[in-house]
Image (tube, rainbow, N blue to C red; front, side, top):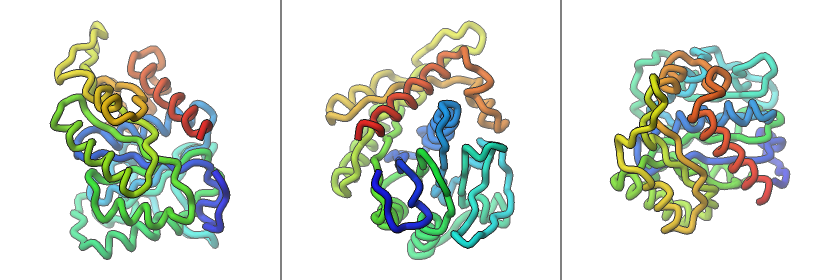
Length: 268
C-alpha cells in the first residue's frame, strides 16, 4: 500500500474492513481470531472497534477498560501484549459505564468515528482490521469517508450458512460495489458444531451457504469456521484460543483463512 499524508495511518500497510449485513453472525469473533492468527504469524496487527452499540472485543482480548492516553500524534491504542504486536482502540474504552447504552444520533456517531480513524497513533502495523457494526449505515459511510486519504485494501464479509443471513450479505456486497470497496473474500461462520467430547462436526444449521454465495457473486471464499464450545469459552474468558488449542479443527480453519487473506493482500 502506498503511503499517505495521514499521520495516524501512514505506517499501516494494509487496512481491512470486516463487514456483515446482519448482526449476530460472529463478526467480532472473526476479527479477534484473525488478529490473533496474524500476530502468531509474526505480523503487527491493529483492531479498530467501531461497533458503537456492541463493543465486545476488549472483553474477548481481556484488556478490561483501561484509560486511553494521548501523545503528540493522537490517542495511544491499548496493547494486548508486552511485545506491542496487537493494538486495539475501541469505543468500549470511552464509556463510563460498560452497561450504558449508546443513544447517539448520526452526527455524533460519525464525529467519533472520524476521530477514531484519524486520531489514533497506530505506529507501524502490517494489518489494521476494522470491526464495523452490522448493516450499511452512517457508521460504514463515515469509516470509508475518513479512510479516503489512505487506501482501503478491501473488506471481508462474514455470514452464517442460512439463507436469511446470506441474503443480508448480498446487500453488503452491493454496498461494497457502490462504494468501490474490493471484496477480499467471504467467511462462513457457525458452519457446523464441533462436539467437545468426540470432535465430530454436526451441521446444526444448513451448510455451504457462504461458499455458494461466493460462487454466485464471483467472490473469493476464504473458508468456514465451525461452532466450537472451546472457542466460545476462550472468548468469554479472554484467552488466546490460537495458543491454547493448536490441535483443534477450528485452529486449522482460522489459520487457513488468515493465510489466504495474507496471500490476497500481498498479491494486490
